[in-house]
Image (cartoon, rainbow, N blue to C red; front, top):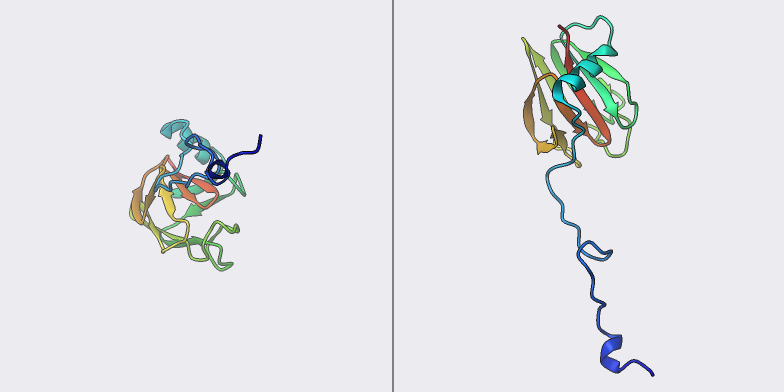
Length: 147
């Protein structure tokens, strides 16, 4: 029996989440969180003899890479001249700036396309403490500090 004219032009019923439904975008991402103290200790363990703050890639491309951060400003991005060079299409050329001053570290998003996330929340600026996770594109960086 052929379908009636009306049924051929109706959309099939879909359950929420089926393909074809619009995707809702949010300003948060799932952060990797095995525990702040453990995360910071594990990140710092791979950097012998650094002083002050450091960033350690704990997930994503270049896992295990690290940058000891001395006093001053450190740009992160896909620009080959960036002090923290993150070569991936998910990272803007001039993505974020880390600022180290006496005893403190902060991150500033530089108007990146995909945003900068701290502990799972998109941010334009955030002060950072040891154990914080900064997500830039597919790079998960953990803040470490020497004892």
